[in-house]
Length: 172
Image (cartoon, rainbow, N blue to C red; front, side, top):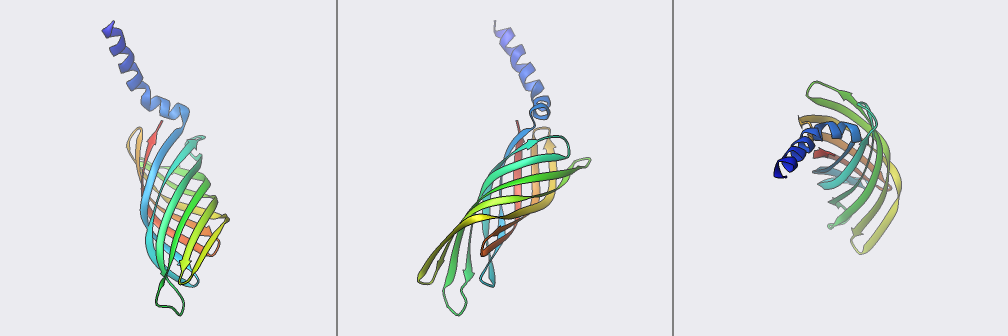
């Protein structure tokens, strides 16, 4: 009986790289530095998020996720900073150019955002829809595991974010 379970487990583990290509699903996480712009000023902060993708073929996929970021941007004519916190829910279409050890990608789409800005004496909350896009390189470490380095742009009303992020992706 134990021998049957071992054979079944070996077959299941052996089929994982194939199933990633069959199902086309993956999930991952990103983190990095962001240049956040508000009211004519900009400063550096951080950004991190999680995402999921469905790969239609070797070239085209759809991606969705959630991203959070934060930065303290100088306030005009004030000594205090604008404390900016944002959450975005990007949905993008991504095109890949397969290479020998990974691929180059570019993506574009929209994001629903919720931005909180705490200016000296004023609390501002803004939400809505904006453009998002990006580009980068994915290095395939193992058949189910990718590392990426990318650029992410987000327009969130009066706030813009330009981020350089590192990511990990696990195929399912």
